[in-house]
Image 1 (cartoon, rainbow over the protein chains, first blue to last red):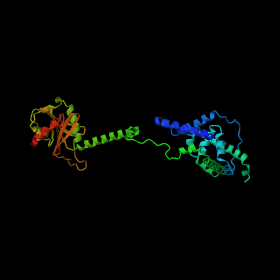
Image 2 (cartoon, rainbow over the protein chains, first blue to last red; image 1 turned 135 degrees about the vertical axis):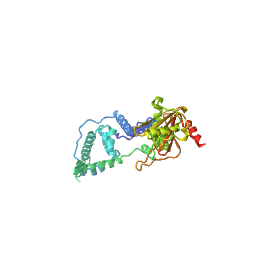
Image 3 (cartoon, rainbow over the protein chains, first blue to last red; image 1 turned 60 degrees about the horizontal axis):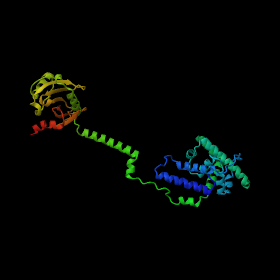
Image 4 (tube, chains in turn yellow, brown; image 1 turned 135 degrees about the horizontal axis):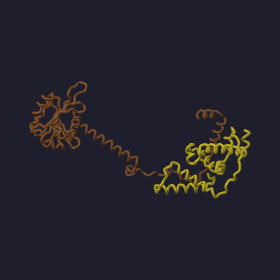
Amino acid sequence: MLGDSPKAQEVFHTTLREAALRAAHGELPKERFWLFRDARWRCLEATEADLQPESLKLDEHDLAPHAASQIEQMEPTQLAVWISAAPDPQRTALALFYLDEFDYDEILDIADLKLTELSRFLVQGRRQLQAWLDGNFPEATNV
Amino acid sequence: MRSAVSRAADSPEFANQQNFDRAVAALVTLIPVPPETAEWFAEKDLVVGSKWTWKKIVRNPAVLAISIAVVVIAGVSVFQVLSRLNDFPGSATARKLLTVAASTRPVMLDPVSTEAGTLSDLFFMKHGLEHYDVPEEFADFRTIGCRVFEDEESLRIAQIWLAEKRMQLFLFPADRNTKTGAVLRFPGWRYVSQEGWVGAVKEQSGVCFMAALRGGQKDLEPYIAKTKE
């Protein structure tokens, strides 16, 4: 969500500290994913003051059959930065989806999205990443 | 929806998408977690849940609601079982007649001043009622009036009003087995109570006799005990 380790750590600790305090006072919300929602809003707040990505139209390519081998060439931190650079709520959708910990209903709940919106963000994200992969790892396209 | 998913599953585009997602998800797992944050997950129990205490369990609304429901159901069951324990053949009719006793006024009966035991002949001669005999425990009491009537089940019932403590006596046919027609007998005296009235019931020769008065079982017991002595 942030693409910045120290900032992510700060958000993580603040979220847990706040949760511990609320638990101590018996004020934990009853909704199931409140902690994730809370963490998400803290992430968004943390990036509010940062430089915002320019609103430009990214290239989009159809998914290539060799996309998996292109992705293997990526550094994990590159992917983290790529996802964190996406505008929200697409950023949240991609982060939650690729964490592979939540099903669709849970992602919709945490990110306050509709199914069509989630679907659009994911499709768009895949096509944009494919375009980025084609631009950065072109040799793999010839395999 | 299922057929659409099934069709999509066979398409190369869908296979590409699945491979793409799997590869990205695998790469996401490799994104380094800051060591200080990773320490939080070193132990299995990140947050130790508060222990359930008896106080907490009892205060839980669900537990409370279930407990109350169980207590009510148990209470009703016990009440019904206890009620059934005192039941005997004819007890339902006896209870109905206690209600009749509570609503009867002396003017409703034919005035008859005699000993209760002598009314057996009257019931037989005038109404054709056999074995409508007043037991010896109550045979010597003076009567104020009597009548014979039919209840809603067409049972012919004899009612006698005594001067003694405004006691009322009832004679009615004993319950019978619906298949064989045999009289359902029971030994000795049995007590029933209804709306502040109590009755002592005895079966003899296919006819039930009930002595009824306003009060409790202890008010009737002396009359029954008198003959036992």
